[in-house]
Length: 114
Image 1 (cartoon, helix red, strand yellow):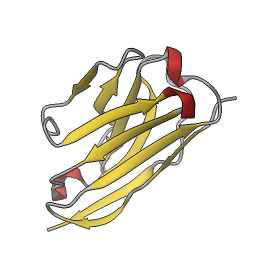
Image 2: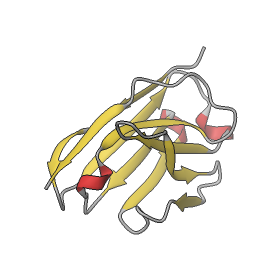
Image 3: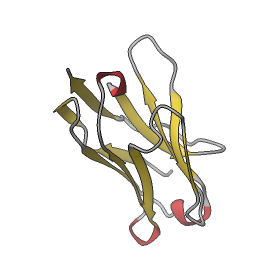
């Protein structure tokens, strides 16, 4: 079974940056579109950024121009560069396939203070 492990979260002031990483135990990235999702307390888990196997990207409106998703297929790793962070970005961040998700990892907490 493939496992996903997210890392890189932390506490940052508004306007700061973080880089999240998502590593998979198996080789699933090279043939699948991947997404970064986030879930704030009391909210559903939402997709914020996606990247296809060919490298095309898409973002939800609230993060467009601030977040950047990338992938390194040889390392089975997907990244999320987050810039100009806002308190509204505070959430647990997860990665998973864009379609046909596999069991979720533990996520990584991002907390943005004002």
